[in-house]
Length: 84
Image (cartoon, rainbow, N blue to C red; front, side, top):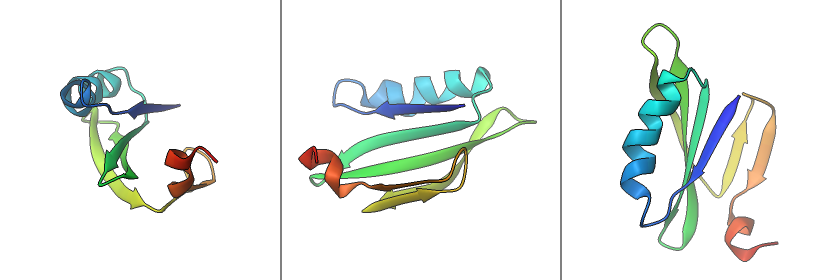
C-alpha cells in the first residue's frame, strides 16, 4: 500500500506532520510527499519501520523517481508540471 500527498501551501504543515503520523499509525508501509521546490517537483519517500510504527526517510528525488518498492516504477518528474 502507498499513500501519496501532493503538498500545497495551505496543506504543507498538515502533510509534513499530521498526515505522516496518521499514515504511520495506520500501518501504511510507504508514504510519498510531492512538493514543488523552485518550480520543480521533489518527491520525499518514506518507508515504515514496523516495530516503531514511524517512517524512516528513504530518499529525496528530483528529475527522476525510480523505486523498486512498493512496485517497480520510474517517473520523469519534470513532466509532472508540464502536464505531458
